[in-house]
Image (cartoon, rainbow over all chains, first blue to last red; front, top):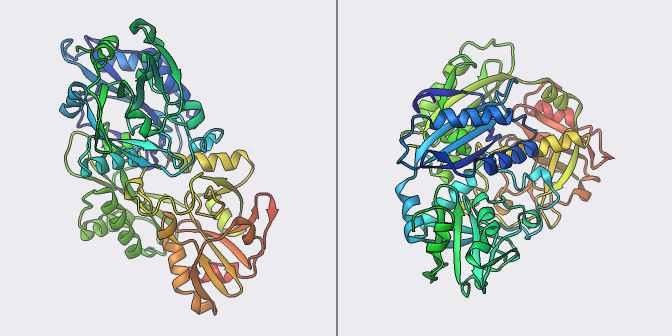
Length: 269
Length: 269
């Protein structure tokens, strides 16, 4: 991998001038890329939706492998694989990798949980289904609003945002997925119906819920109903499971299930 | 300006990995940058909304001036000024310029007009006002959905898209502003109420409408009402005024006012 301060992108690369590309962030732990296949699967789905010709799987695996080759095994990290449509003037897609440590804010969220504010996106919960031009479900490089919403949360004194629909259903967070537990059922928001990004960490949790004695289900939920859940988490690859400890100023938890959730995902409790 | 194929952006620049920046496209004609001040004003407003420390005005003017210095005077062009938050690991904002010719599709749109399809964004017309975290009115580098909607239009056999609100009001196009003329009143959609980008070309037209014997007004409109207008245009800096010649398959115009609109904006009729 080239040093971080070496320019690799052209001034007219569509990543830089249009956010016109896709990416994945993959957790590096003990020298292995956690759920690499699931991330590459999703990257292929995102690229298909944007009509970008992603390089062959083997080339992405090779890029990922090279990027992490010299990273210390004992240090966890976050590998970003990105692919843009390429230069504006034409040519092949641009593919590149960056590798970072997990920052202190992420580690604190995983360890201590997060305080969350809800923010309405205005549109009805099912407004984006069946409209591929709006890129629902694709993980694109166009994250300016995601970043702005996280800055808004910080200005409001919270750690993160939970987006809700105009008709009052919880959707997702700017860089993580909502998961909650009620009466032995582990749940997340249905991606197909809502247009949210299908989370890799949440999918892993729901697929393995049986190991904790739970069943799993996708369903809609209103924020008010989260207050009576047995645990609420925002899950993502790098931060892992961050328990929601306050929602719009109302305390939640701590859930006794958080250590089991973390362990199921392979994080130290 | 560095050659277009020389990398200038780091792999972790927030322009490239988050679309986290702002830009302007400015028309270069007869060696001058048309409405440079209005574009720099808007760039400052966009950067303020994203909380990016844009370089001083004089530095941007100098960058623009250097970028166009060697361009042939007789050739029109489109200068893009962009500014991202900078590298993800911290540091100063990244500012850069690119300069392109006006492509054939843009010239054809200006000359012959465009066919347009409407597409709903799902949210009510005033859902974005008062929510700065959604970056309404800011011209950001996160244009993946804008580009996808234009690809969608092409797949539907149209030249461009007119976004409408979930409650049926016309908003804007992915890279241009809606302007229409009815009974001697030149109109555009109110940016403050709707969260659309305030167009520089549309603002110029409305400010100079009196020179054509018209008054000017911002107001909401439903697409159906555009069918009875005396002229409908999508306006932008590089393409200029493109007359809407069909909306959702229904022919419009040609408007006898299109040559006067073009002339008012300094384009050859």
